Image (cartoon, rainbow, N blue to C red; front, side, top):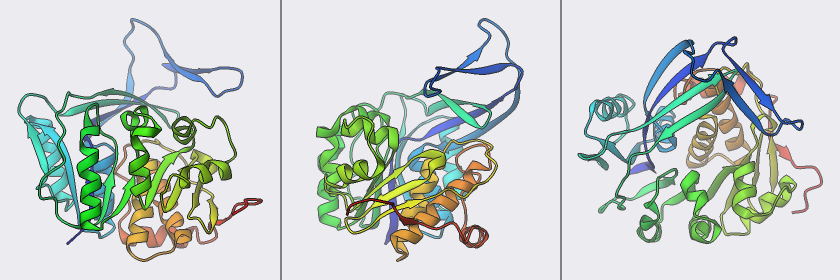
Length: 331
């Protein structure tokens, strides 16, 4: 039986690292709203170009899960093009099952250009139009991991929920941009069915329509929708979880940042893998943080994804960085 099946769109990510002299960041006075500025109608030299076939949230999850020893497969749509061929080859090298990958003869593989400047990324995304269907005959698995898909993917929700009920798979929901734009009413049944729902703080605030709230209040609001574990990440401030009994905060493992794409995926991937392997939530938070920190040290979302030996080494190196109860959180 498969340990985890990931469902989501896949892309070719092309990473361009900008020269410090060719760009600048301008922010509002509160530094919460910033813009990356380049000279208009000019040629902008870049320091490096890195191509990553088989990127995207679901692919990052399935590759990361496979590296941690889980038997993984992906449900995704690729074009019948060279990029699709490269992506299939990449997944096979990583030990990812591809039986449920569809090749679209009319539309190419999705494409993103990622501008890396001072360790932060700005992503230009192109999604091909897709016709989504939940795959027939999807086998039982320990986990189903459902994440970013494009417009029209909501037609799969009924069949996805039926699969969860039939298969008894645990469910991790990591909503992508389109799923968040559907609004809370549309995705609430997915959250209710999930063992883990994970998103970042800004996404949680927008989806729950709570405005700016304390982290304990956000966690309570999210878990009240029915998920077993509410998991919220907040960049350099760390990650936070609530399982109805214990509310925890997990600080980061401080490493020099190179590029941030995929850090959230890496966190959620290792968190779920740890739960699958029987670890408690407190240790799963450490696994997620280690995987995220490793990815932060590379360009692209997959180069730093840890294998089990690397995970053990990272956890040992940062043995003093542990999850702790959130101060003042009323449970």
